[in-house]
Image (cartoon, rainbow, N blue to C red):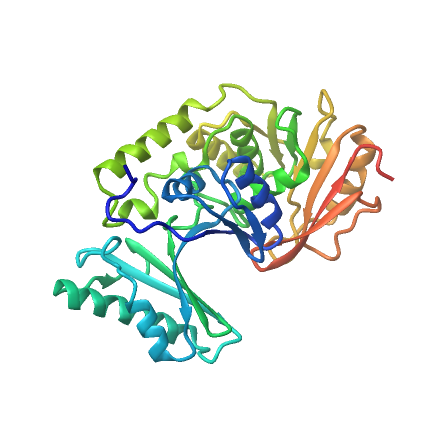
Length: 379
C-alpha cells in the first residue's frame, strides 16, 4: 500500500544544508541507507519513495530542509512559468481549506524578481484549485500547511514541496538560545566533521546554551532529532490520511526503540551561570544526559581517557570575546595532551599559534568561519 493515497511517485529529493556542511550531510544520508545520494552546492540529492523523505526529516541531524521535486520545465517568460506550474495536479497536497506559501530563488535567467516569481507561482496554483474545486486556498507566510519552493536557473524552473515545514534545526527542545545561539544542525555537522567516534568523552568549555554537548549526547545515544517535533510539514498535506499517519507512527516508534540508554561522558562548561542554567533547562527538555557546570576556560582539565574538546569560541560579529580568550585557547594544546581539539573560528583576529592538521570552511549563518581540527601529536 502506498504511504499516501493518490500521491504521484516523487521525483528526486534534495536536502538543504548550511554552506560547507554538504559533505557531512552526504555521509549521514548514506549511513541512513538512502539511495542515489550525491552532494551538490547547498545540499544533497537523494532518491527513494515518499517514506525515504519522511525518514530524512525524522533522522537527519544536519539537513535544514527536505525538498521533493514535483516538476521541472522551461520557463523563459512569465507565461511559460504560469503554465508549467498550473500543469501540476495540486489536489493531492492542497484543498481550499488548507494554506499555502511560496518562496523562490533565481539565477542566470530572464525572469529575475524573486517576489514576482513567487507571486506568479502562487497565482497558477490557486487558479487551478479554483477552476477544479470552485474555491482556492489562502496564503499563510508564517505557518502554511503546504510550502512550495521555486528554483529558476538558466530559464529552467524546478518546483519543490517542502516536507519539513519549518527548518529542521528547530528541534523543539531549545526555548532560549541566549545571545548567539549555534544552530543545532551546524553543531551536528561540526561533531560529524570533527571525527568524533561517539564513544570517547567530549567536552565543550565554552558551551553557552548547551547546543554542542546536547547534540553530541543525542547523536551518541541515537536519539532521532525529529522525535521532538509534534509534526512535519508533510503531515499537513491533504493526502496524509489514516494509512500515512499509521505508517509515520511506526517510523516514530522504531526510532524510539533504537535509542541507547547510555552514552559516553559529555559535558559543557561556561563562565556564565545564566548560560549554564539555560543549558541545563535545554538538556532536561531534550532528555539529554549531557551535564553542565560553571567553570573558566583556563580551568579546563584533561578528560579521562583523553577525548574531544569541541567549542565555538565567541567572535566579534556575534559576541565580544574577552582579552584573555586568545591566551587561554593557545594553552589548550599544552594542557590537554592526547586530546583532539576542534574549534569553530569566526574571527580573523582569533588565531592559535599551533597549526591545525585540518581545517574546513563553514558558514555560521552569513558569517564565514573556519573549523580547525588539532589532532593529538599535530605539529
